[in-house]
Each structure stands twice: as C-alpha cells, then as structure tokens.
Length: 224
Image (cartoon, rainbow, N blue to C red; front, top):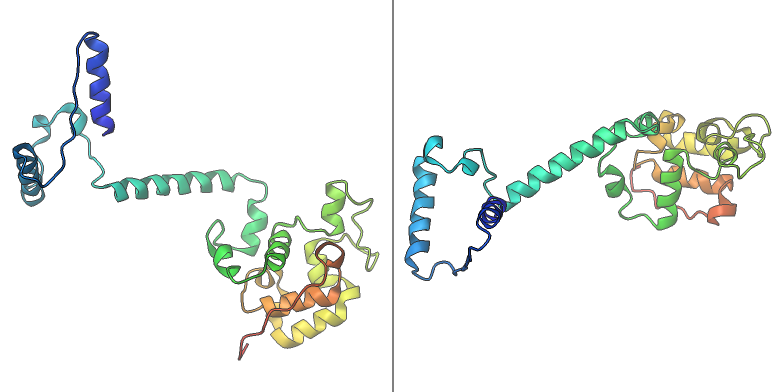
C-alpha cells in the first residue's frame, strides 16, 4: 500500500491535470482480474517470485510477507531502540543488579496478583526512589541522608534491608524463615518466592508506614 500511494503521488505530481480513478473490488466473487491475481499469487508461492529484473523497481527489494510480519519487525526494532536508550541511562547498572532480565515483562508478571501498595513499594525499592532518607535528601525532602532509626549511616535501600540495627529482630525472623537468600538484596527484590517474607519484614520494621500506612502480608505458599 505504501508503494502504491508513492507511485500515485508521483503520477499526480508529474501530470497535474490527470484524473485518476481508483476502484476497490471485493475479493472471491468471480471478478476476472481478482481471479487472475489469485492464480498468480498461488503460482508465486509454488514456483517463487519472478526474476528481479522483471519486477517494477519498487518491488525489487524484499517485502514483508504479511501484516503480522510487519508488526513483528516494527516491534522488534522498537524494542531494540528502547534497550539502546535504556543502557545509556544512569539507572541502568542499578536496575541490572536487581533484575538481570530488565527491561523485560518480568516485573509485570511478578506483580500481576499484588495489590497496588505492594507493587509501589517493590518498584520504589528496586529503583532506589523510595521514601528513605538517602533519596529524600537527594531530592531535598530531608535535611540529612542519615538513617533516623539508628542515626549511624546513610539510609540507602541496602542499609534499610541489610544493616540497620533498629530492624534486627524483623530481619532475623526473615533470615530464619528464608535462609541465606534473605541476605542478598537482589534476591529479596526479584524473587517471587521471597516476597511474602520480604513484605512481612517491611511491615514489621514500620519504616514505610508514614507513607504507605500498614503493610499487609502476602500469603506464604505451601512448602515455601
């Protein structure tokens, strides 16, 4: 269709006074031109296309075979362009430490059955844009980046989840239930089997309560 429209425009530009009449005909109702086109199409499938030198110039390049093929090629190009832009982002390496498949639909699949509150907390902690003092200080919403719970270190996501002494009891309970995987931030923030214990820790710490309110628990699957 694009080729047809370009050819049509070329003719209109070259011959200003020409009148062109385009008629669309329904298919498969015994119109001789349509039937001949169908026969040639079937012949091309069986025997291959005509030699390139016999084709009109615009048709000498390979053409998409179907609408779905065009859409697939377009989305693949779009995906590659998005990845190229993403890899240049300052947040790229931060997110790669959490989810090696990013960008992907993994997060969407993992949060399909989550309530909005859980999804928001998870994404904010993954990106580091969470209501913790290090980030709040960076965006000038807190006077200091120091953790208000222990008053010892900058309150990063890593500090909150792994180091803050004020949350030792909640953290110990999580580690006892999960094992050594609970000592790795990347696994806590990306493993769906750890999410019930992870959100239980978040709720017990009460650190995010002022922003999100009470953090409900997620049911722990049998055998987890």
